[in-house]
Image (cartoon, rainbow, N blue to C red; front, side, top):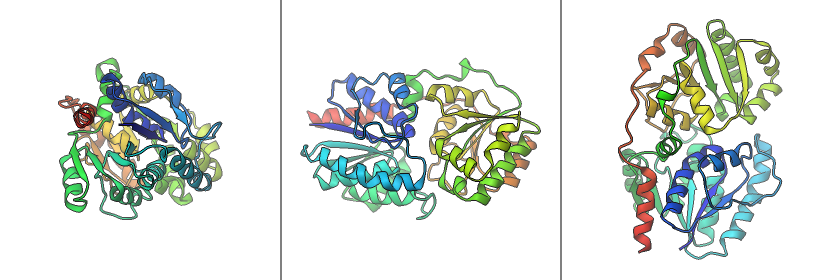
Length: 358
């Protein structure tokens, strides 16, 4: 039985890497495909997690796709390449992750070529069709193609059983990102709390593609910089939009705002844990910081993930409210203890396929 892991983005690789690690540890066959949706630091992540399988790059010398037009041109091309590749297999396990355009293209290609779709981080839903966009739409399409849904929580497991009864649901009792933290031995005791620093990571469609919205976010950062040092880790798409809307130079000239390139997973998480609070719109950040109990403000109106909500994390979508929350230091109430990893989600997934192989 062939096990084909298809990865397109950094966030996907961070969460798929521990599954590949345990598959390789148990000597289960692994084929590792990269679609090229992201290119920056992907090899660094492969090295960090010591993935042995040689990645197959479906598109050679590909630049990262960080805007809508680029992605729209890339999507049909990668769909065709995936279909041509997967038609050489019969009933292979095709592992797709999450809710990206790579997930969509991979799941549809696997279904079209009569292979089995294994959806990692399955069952998540915001219950709002257009929020987040386009992730929620992608998830709902992928759910319909899925043969085996690996669900990180009981809620996700119940959702798949109720609405997709023809899909086999597997409760992994946690997100595989917990294994990523464990494998890299990232611990809070290795870092110190640095006062008056904030880490910022923003890349969601709703936050960066609307000029007025991004302008308000930039104003918020300037206001917060009067009291804090801000480490703003830039996604390529975020930097492009900041430049397009003439916001980048003002941020760069502010000596209390450090514009940082995207970095390796271990370095980013260490930077985040060295801050007083993290402002993010990323689901992965929400999950990993919940594990550490680190104060987190999620710049969104809703989230499909429950990790940390009401514990170490809070949803705030309006920038004036967020400014007041930070300046009044209400985020200090969000500081909690680190969790313990009771189960290994990646081992649960590996054991399932190891058993089914026998």
